[in-house]
Amino acid sequence: MSSSEEFVNAILELEEEKALKIAREKLEAGEDPLKILDDLKVAAEKVGEKYEKGEFFVADLVMAGEIMKEVSELVRPKLKELGKAREPVGKLVIGTVEGDIHDIGKNIAVTMAEASGFEVIDLGVDVPPQKFVEAIKQHNPEVVGMSGLLTLAIESMKKTVDAIKEAGLRDKVKIIIGGGRVDEYAKEYSGADAWTNDAAKGIRIMLGWVGGKKV
Ligand code: B12
Image (cartoon, rainbow, N blue to C red; front, side, top):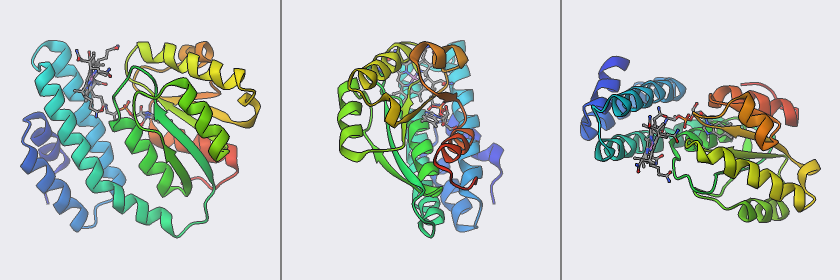
């Protein structure tokens, strides 16, 4: 079986077929799907570094993003299977906030939440505050998750929390923000209850809120 290094390099060299082939082989050989997602995160960090150094252009970012998305879509059904046998532990409404279309991390968080037994309502990307409010009214979730990778996403997160407050729903939900650019400051500024840049940690926090078992 190919090593993690070969897998990460295939992504960095933008070799789509090779990266997907390695991911398929790993899954068929029974490798833990979470390990493949870890490799994906390493690849994404390196892609980001290359972009910052000017070694990658936006077109390369798009290609790398596409490959990473396809890999996470391959892994998703496997992780879902792990969650199937369990009782639903709670409901999660999640989306990438307004103005931001990055969704690789959100999709990983969705997959892991489903694997941990959450019923997930995924609102997609570039989600306006009002759409979060409507989804909370409709689905009555215990947890709301907001994802964002752009600096401007922090402002959208704040607007979304404010809209939830204005709708009188703030006390009904716990809110977690996630993504590469969030931190304690973003949590305080936006008015969320927790933040994470690691999906596994985020899921543990959410499970703590709904009283579920930790994965
Ligand atoms: C891939 C990528 C893209 C792809 C996105 C593809 C897609 N479908 O998502 C494309 C090419 C489309 C793209 C576009 C742009 N991008 Co971009 N992109 C990236 C890149 C390289 C990787 C992001 C990624 O997927 N990371 C991997 C995932 C797994 O990590 P993650 O999102 O942090 O998620 C993890 C955790 O945070 C957590 N998580 C995430 N969300 C949530 C939510 C909850 C509830 C929970 C519990 C957990 C959780 O779970 C994940 C697993 O642990 C980053 C660089 C970087 N290092 O971040 C730049 C980066 C984010 N992009 C950047 C920029 C500037 C752009 C563009 C503006 C470029 C342009 N000029 O057009 C556009 C933005 C368009 C828009 N309106 O959103 C900048 C942002 C700078 C800033 N501070 O605002 C970055 C940082 C690159 C850089 N160094 O400059 N991008």
